Length: 307
Image 1 (cartoon, rainbow, N blue to C red):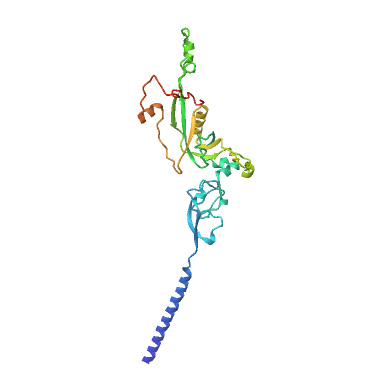
Image 2: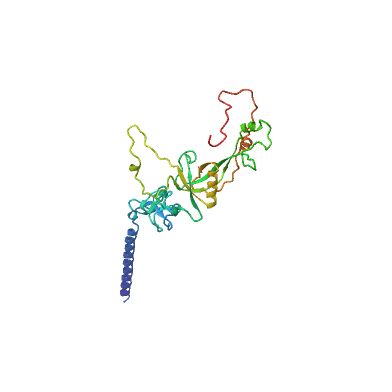
């Protein structure tokens, strides 16, 4: 009787041990299947929903995604999306592709200027040349500061004529003498409008985009290809700042643009620069008058922006 109980107990122990071994083996097999690594590659992914025609910068990042789910033409670098806008609504988690993006220049060609302007701002066109546009280096998406130089002259308060003018009772010959005296304008330069967004460079056209081959004929052997330089730039400004730019341009001020560093939106406080400022800051002293000079020196500098 006792021997039978022992056999039963041994049988139970063996059964439990066998079950434990089988369970461990099954778990090991399942675990080995779960540890199979999925091949991943880094691509550009939207980390939040991006509405149509809005910038994608700041809303995307590089993430490692399963290779099998990555489109063939997926973007691999954040630089590929710099300055780009969403061509349509982009859901969060979307892997970015070129077809999902559109550049401000492409919106220009489509005549969709209004989509680029933020509420409370207006778009203003402004003429540029090589000097004022930082050697034509300004591109859509840049932010610029506006530098202005003014030439000040004295006016007669009553007639608004350049001073000096001959008073009502002039001595004989005084009027002729005074007419010879030319007033030298006083120059002042100042940083004015700041952090203006550049919407476009060149002509804003609603016509279909002309292909590069059709727009620029192939140069003959030994000739350089002709490059069409932009004549205008389109800035996004508040209505008040747009009036400041208009007044400065129509009053004959010299206007240059300075490009800001990317993501630099600080407001600078600067001093107006005049001849007195230059002399004081850099310790320039007035040279003594001499009864001689060097050949070629002593010529008068320009007295107006046009000269």
